[in-house]
Each structure stands twice: as C-alpha cells, then as structure tokens.
Length: 373
Image 1 (cartoon, rainbow, N blue to C red):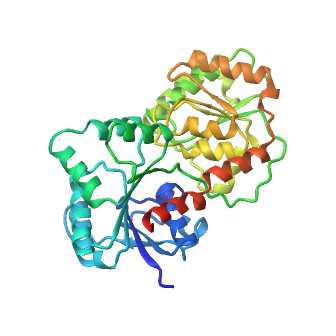
Image 2 (spheres, rainbow, N blue to C red):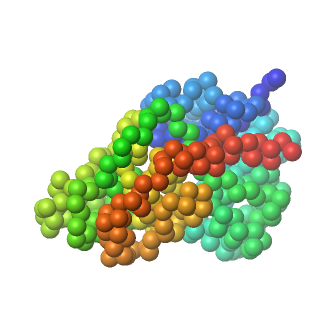
C-alpha cells in the first residue's frame, strides 16, 4: 500500500523537539499508520535524536531553502512547489494567524483533497486568546476553522470544554488529545530513594523554580531527602542560585542541579529513583514531564496547569498545590516527608495505568480516524 505523505510545519526545529510532541506525533503517525512522515524545518541542529531515540525510517526531515528573508515566504515557496504531493499538512498552534491562513489557503487551493490538522499546543492563556480574538484576525481564524482546517486537537479536558462552550471551535472539528509518552527504556524500578524531582527549563517564569527552591528551604525536618533539578538553567537565574546557597549553605549537598541531560535513559533513571515529582509551574500546554514522572511511579505535587488534573484522574496519586505559594508547598512536602507511606504506591501499577491512557500510538489512532473517517 502506498503511504500518504504527512508534513508537519515547524521551521524552528531543534534536536530536543524530536523527543517532545513536535517530533513524537509525526513519528508515531509514520511508525504505526500509513504515512510517510516528515517535519519541514530549517537545518538548525545536529538532530542526533532522530537516529538515537527515533527510528529514522519512520520520520524524515525536509529542509527549507533560505530563498527569502522571512520564514513565512520560505514556507510559501515550499508549499507552492509541493502541496499537490502532500496528503496531510500539520501545524502546531494558531499563533501566527496571518501566516497559517496563507499556508492553509495555498495548500487547499492546490490540493482540494488534502487534509489540514492543527495541534493547538495551548495553555490557558493561549486558549483565552483564541476565544477572545477580535477584528480581522478573528475573521481569519474563523475562516480557517470553517473552511481550511479539517481536524484540530487540544491537550487538556479543561481547554477542550472552554473551546466548545465558547463556540470557538465546533465539536465536529475538535478532539481532545493529551500529550503522550513513547518510552523505550528497559530501566527497572528498584527501591526508590528520598528524592524530590523537578524537570524542565529551570528559572524560566513559566516553571516557577524559585517557588520550589524557597519551599524546600522552609522545610523544618528534611531528614535525608534531596531535591534533584534536571534541565537547562535560564541565564538570568544563575544569580538567584548563587544567593540561594549563600543564604542556605546547609542545603549545598541537599539541592542538586544536574543540568541539561540529553541521554533519555539517564533522565528516566532519575524518574525511576524519585518518590515525589514537584511541578510548581505557572503555565503549561499539558506537561510531558508530568506524564513521564507519573509513568515511573512518582507522587505528583503539581499546580493546576495544563493536563495536571487529567493525569491525576488516571493515577489518583498526587495532589494539586497552590500556585506561587512556597509556604503551602513547604507544608505539603513536610507532610509527605513525615509520612513516607503516602509515597509507596506500586510503581508498576502506575506504569500500566499511564501507558494505557497516554501511549502515543493510541492517541495517534484517534487522529488518524478523524483524518480518514
């Protein structure tokens, strides 16, 4: 059977995107369904994950030519030449209303049978912007949804309900598809350690790392617990870290910054060893780290962002914490440290639950069925 051509527009692709939804969604469509999957991008990185983490046979990169001075014009040039040979054109979000309007319009004019799929990748703020958009951009958004886009998906149940109830997107166009996992590691979960884990871009406003650090410093009895932080550190945050250890020198051996880790097995090792995953974020579209930590049997302490409640509904192992409240978070962490039996749920039971709900193959099957009714 001849495979259909699937092209995801993502000109800013970097290597790390390949192990997030940007790469895993088209990769899964190519691996398990009848698609020749591609990401349209500039050549921005070395893309080692393409072979190390993904099977290069199931996902290819198409490099944009830098013929013009703008990304939009380069994508338009590609679509003018290739739209007739693309069966599914995918984009992430609707931020660039004008650019996407042009892309989809050209594609549909040149390929009437082609399908357009948009993954909204939206946090609460982006959902509000979609609902409240005004003027010419509202007109273009409505025109795209009605005439140019065939399938749209949004990550969290809360976002789905808001878009439907506000009549922003009709229910026959929108499906709720959370971010998923595609974990190939053979790591076994041995005895867990007294680790509190956080994974993400440390020090960014969205991740609220300072709230977690402040809370950890307020815990009266840490016993032998440690805070493990994995991820690149925002340059503006280095001064905060220096001051933090000057004020709290007793925590130098308790708060461990591991930096950015490219080896997925090493990250999975920290997930598998930790008992608590703390996620004090201010905004998330869904939160892939939440799913991965739940998969490896972590008790989740998370703010009510993205798909946090969706994950907790599946695992029933964790709780929602107040946003921007380090005193409250310190109290919850102290409670768990003082009552370790609350963090002893069977990790393999959690692994099965999370894999059943958030497996990328199952999620992409829903997308494929909408694209091919």
